[in-house]
Length: 245
Image 1 (spheres, rainbow, N blue to C red):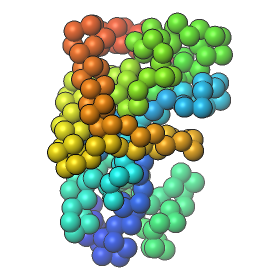
Image 2 (cartoon, helix red, strand yellow; image 1 turned 90 degrees about the vertical axis):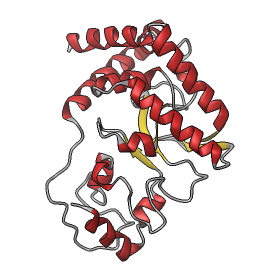
Image 3 (cartoon, rainbow, N blue to C red; image 1 turned 135 degrees about the vertical axis):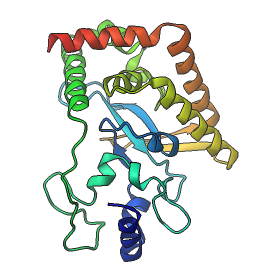
Image 4 (cartoon, one colour; image 1 turned 30 degrees about the horizontal axis):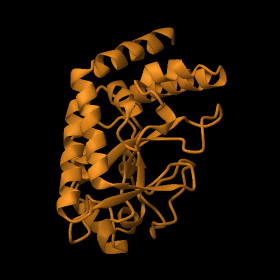
């Protein structure tokens, strides 16, 4: 599928899905374009740790202040179409094989079935299983050591240790991703967005954060990654978890 398909979608419905869907799960993408265009971060379960829910979720996010997906141009066409996230490639198909209600088409041809990176998903599930077991056993220190966060479930939104862990699990260079996110935050500030509001996955919560504060949080994470051996510690922890599986 190429840009012609994007034009077809836009002419049929005005790219409604891209304008109204504000959250897209990270599924192990290695394309560069989404990281320079969309906010990516790890969101803790703000309702509290639970052995029945994923402890954190990594997603591409469109803050509520933005009128539509940041990848759309003035004509409603996707500027990163050839490198769009996997969930965007699957849209409008839903997990149960149906078509999302945003889509006005009765039949949609997607070509080949698109899945998340299988190795990343395997690693993600192993990590989440490890964290959930630690929660059930009351091993808070073990989770802190894994994520390199003293209070992992109170960590600032978006840029935290779980994000670094999942980027490593996906085989990405965290430094490159954080650099792209810094540019995205700086661009948002230059356009007058002094604060950004994010929907917390799987909850009813929304959290507003000052853009300058998010940038400071990201820079602190970069400092820990480069100067406090955070990356090395996270990689060792990841290898230990995967070796047990």
